[in-house]
Length: 389
Image (spheres, helix red, strand yellow):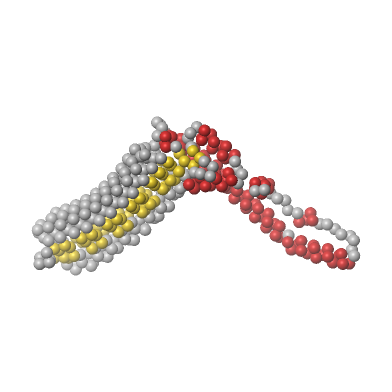
C-alpha cells in the first residue's frame, strides 16, 4: 500500500473519488465536510493535519478498510455518525477532544479498546454501540454522565469502572454486554437508568454505592448470573421489575447492618424489638452479629413487593439515624460537662492552697465550699455511662 500516493484533501466541498486509498489533509483544512468520505470502502490510511478542528457528520461513514486513526489535539468535535460502520477500525487515539457526537463509532466491530481523555465531559448517544470487539474501556475522570445506549451490545467488554464524577448512567447504556462480569460503581453516582445493564448475563454481583437514589425499571433485568446485590447505605428507590429474571440469592446491607449492631451492643435493644415484627413476618432477615438481608421471595411478590421492602428499610434507617443523633448529642453534652469541670480546676487549686495556709495558721473556722464547684451530670450522659457499667 505504501506505493499508493496520498490524495490531498483541501476541504470546501472538495469532491473525493470513491476509490481513494490514502488521504492526507492540506494544512489549511479546519473542517472535514459532512459525508466527505462517506462509503469510501477502499480508504485504508488517513493522516490528519494539525489545525483540524471539526470532523463533520458521517464524514467517514462506512469506510470498511480504515484500520486506525490518530486525531490531532486541535480537534474539538467529532460529528454525528462520523466513523459509523468502519468495521475494521482497530485503533482510535482521541487526544484532547472535548466532544464526541451521537453514533460516532457505532458498529466499529473491530475496535478493541478506547480511552476517553480528561477533556471529555460528555459523549453522544450510542457513541460506541455495537462495538462487539471492544474489550477495554477507560472512562474520563471528568465525565458527567454515560449516555443512552453508549456501550450497548459491546459483547466482548468484561469489566467497567464508572468514575466518581459520573452522576447518571442513562437508559440501556450497557445493555446486552454479554461478557460483562465486573462493574465498579463509585460514590457520586445518583441514577441508574432503565435497562442500563439489561441482559448482562455474566454479571454475578453488584455493589450499589450510598449516593445512588434511584434504579430504573429493568435496570438489571435478565442478568441471569446475578446472585448478590450489596446496598452500601440503605435502600435506593428500586422499581418492582429492576431485577426481573435474575436468580438473586441475597440482597445485603453491610453498612446498615454494622451500624445497627453497634447500637444494639450499646444497649439500645428496643430497636431490635421493633425490627422483630418484620422478621416474624418473613419480610426481613437479620442475625445478631451478621447482616440485614431481604429474602428474595419478598421482592418477587405480586404487586408492590419492592415498595413494601423499601418502606421497612426506610423505617429501620430512620430508627438508626435517631439513635445515632441521640448518641452524638449525648457525647456533646458530656464534652460540655467536662469543659465545665475543667473551668473549675483553677478555683479548686486555689481553694486547696488557702486551706493549707489556714491549717498552718491554726485557723479552726474551716469552711467547706464544695457546693460552689459541684457540676450535675446530664441525664442522657448518666444513661450512656450506665450502659457500659
